[in-house]
Structures are given as structure tokens and as C-alpha cells.
Length: 312
Image (tube, rainbow, N blue to C red; front, side, top):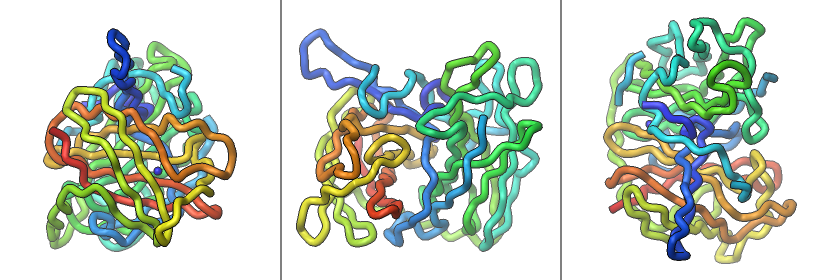
């Protein structure tokens, strides 16, 4: 169920646990991410903007393997608007407060021209995220692209404050063909910005009547297994539906700089019977508190749960 990066771009975190001596698999931090969200949670840390959804089309300044869900490897944390000649550009430096708004942007290549051909990643050609500086208001959207390469991400109402928006993509042509990128830009929402304290680290949280329990103690820069168990009214949930080719989409943001990491479950998708346990390979590069947003689907509805994880 946050400098740019190559795989943060495709938003995939794929690292291998070092269970066997001499075998260390890389877990990719994937930023950007995937996922359109039609549901939202009222839990702390998500009250400044609900997750939005938008149809997918075919084909700045910094601030703030083949296993299921596996993405291309990359490095970085998504906190830059440029990488290897590719740049995230936008005229939008501010967005209105309290009402839906469209953020328009383009990705230019090393030749300075807008990129219009993108590879499909987890059923989408572009994954877009928005997060406020206090790690509230999480939104995960699939924007649409016009013929000239201009993308439009339809955001739900934003609360005043400093925000960062991330674009995760893979060019399908040019020097960056097949490479994963995650680029970001800062945007301001005018108004009286009241900071929401980050909820304390915990091992469980609730969303839409579901209880999610996280097991695992990740250490900075090291691959560790992470398990998320989902129950409802005390009973194991076994009807998780595939969402973006996985049973859950997990995104993490680092407290303080909003660095981005994207982790995918390694649990094999076999139909509409996922759960109750979802396994992840987690490799978070920096110690401190990370705010995790896990998205999963049941009965055709997308749920989003949030939890603060302490990384030593």
C-alpha cells in the first residue's frame, strides 16, 4: 500500500535483503511514484490535501530484477529540478489556496526541447506527487500530457505553505532512454501557513477502518526487510486488489528536507486476493524520521494510510 534520481524517478525502491552472505541486492529508492488516488484518509498528516486522481495520457530551484514491483535502479532523492541534461520546467511558482488547481509543467531533454515520448512504468507514463514541507497534504496523481509535451496535474485543494512537487518518469527516446528520473520543484501556496507537527514514530496506523502494522527496523543506507500487515475489525484482510501492478504502493518522505523514496512490495500478485501481509525491501539512505504513505485497494476503492517510521 524528496536532488533527483535515476530510480527515484521511476520511483521504485528495490533493494535486496542481505539474508545470504555475499549476496546483497540493491533496493532502489524510487521516487516519483506511481499511482492515482481516488480515496483519502483523514488521519493526521493528510489533512492539508486529499489524494487526487487524474487520467493518464499516452505516451527551479531545490528546497525543502524481476521480482514483483521491481523498477530500474537509480540513485538520488528527487530534490533537484535537473539531472543529466533533463529538466523539470514550469511557470507555476504559486498555486491558489483552498480550491482545486492544475499544475502545468514540462520535461525538457539535453537538446532543450520538451520530451514527448515516455516509457510506461506501472501502467503510467508519468507519476506526480505533491507534499507540504511539514509532510502533510500528500497527493499522488497521474497527469495528462498535451501533444506539445505540456503536462497537467489536477491537484485537490492545497493548504497555505511551502510545497514540493515531484515528477517521476522514464524517457523513451534520446540519451536518457530507459533511465529513471525523479525531478522536483518548489511551489508556494499563499496564506497563513500553520505547521502541523509530525506524528510520533509508531508501528501501526488506521485508515478507512483498516489497521496497518509495520514490522522491521530499517537502518540508514542498509537494505532491510519491511512487512506491512493489514487487518479489519481484528481479522486479516485477504481481498487486496492489484493497484498499479502491485498490491500496495509505498512512498516515503524524509522529515526536514522532504527527500523522496519509493518502495514496492515483493509479494507476487495473483489476483484480487492479496494480503494480509505485504513484504518490502526497504533501503532508506538517511537516518531520522520518514513519513510513509501506503496506498492499497479493496472493492474498487483506493485507501491511503500514513505512518511515521524512525530510521536509525
